[in-house]
Length: 272
Length: 319
Image 1 (cartoon, each protein chain N blue to C red):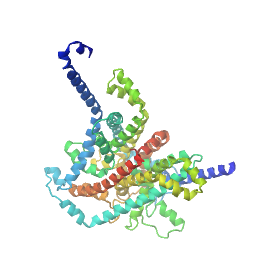
Image 2: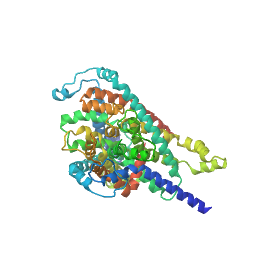
Image 3: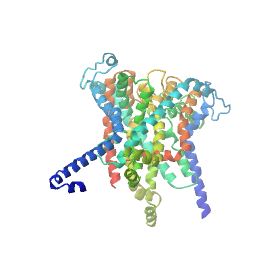
Image 4: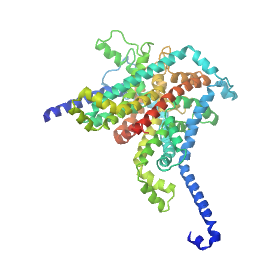
């Protein structure tokens, strides 16, 4: 009896691995092709038998500037998102103010606005205030991917902090700001990490604003570097796939080292 | 308080007023301090969500083009942009494509996501690890996933056609991305791949919240397997299912990277949707007025689903 259950469980594991292999085949293919160099072979072989880093060399040659832009913009977007979202999340979880319901409703709707709508209008706004083709402009625009999500996910967490904790601090004479900074923020560390990780990934993966709010070659995120390759006929897939692998590294690394935060955030996507 | 009481009846009458005023001003100061926490977020939401929507609505009725950026003038044209958009030959195509793309993607993502969720609900060695690794297609930059699919689907050297040919399933290569008949199918396929993890994750958590006792009681009544799914799982999962489906529609309506990266909306507009058409009009033809008109139509469609979502979600909370 025990043995058949064990055998069945093992069978499940094998099926699970096959499912995963099937779903992640494109990721494998990305890595595989990236190691087959910069040639113009008519097709790619299933395994990288002659491993070469020629694709990566050419990718870095083309994309180092874009890579730096993406890093700066993604980190900036994390800072902006957390600076805006953390106090708001605290207020939503603790205070009863008239009009807060409207704001919460606006946040839910904001998540659903198609990015092209925002890009359409921001283009003319940024054009008139000189934010087109700037890091700051991209940071502010990319934060739209994350701010509503971050507020909702952090306030859901902060609601679980016992009120006694912050009230104790306030009785000791600390103002809201002190209570927030020295109690709420440290206690909510995990939800801040989740919100921060996702705002990094959202900004890093952004395509919409890189496409519409940058026009030259100077400031351009790595996602647009990939898109440029895809315009027209691709002669050599090695460098394209190497760039795709490089742009996928943060997601892969975070999924491995920060799994529990990612899992928390993935569920929070539908948080109320 | 004690001092005012001791000061005699004459001032005692005035004192509560002072206290009340002071208390009221303390309370309004307190309220101000509370609002201060919300101010940055409110300003941000107004500038980066509120303003774009209003601006987009206005632009939809303006002749807003390259000239506008030079002269600063955007003449009011009323419904002319909408008339131009709706009467253009491509409008019907984009509407139909948007509907097919959304429907195809949702059905594919949901069915496969649900099957995956049901499979992973049976606990087995490594199930948690495998399930979290499955999130990868969703976490990767969409344009990176799109790039590799572009090569996989390539008609000449792509691994999909190679494999199908070596299995003798096809004799001629399928023109996945260059034939108007199959390009939409290919684009849907890739979007399904991206969406499966999201569907699986939410449905899995929905499955987790169904108490085991229900299944135990059901098993006593002979409800196992398919019967158990139909009479226990599905009714209890319905709220989550609605949320997943509506969110899926809203996310699919905005998809841009996959289509632009794979086909650019072609061949012959076979994969042009409302979102890509709006992009083309605004940022390729610099006709921001008609581009805004198209995206306003997109807003209305999204809004309908957003309201459905909020309703469903509230009902799910109430239950």
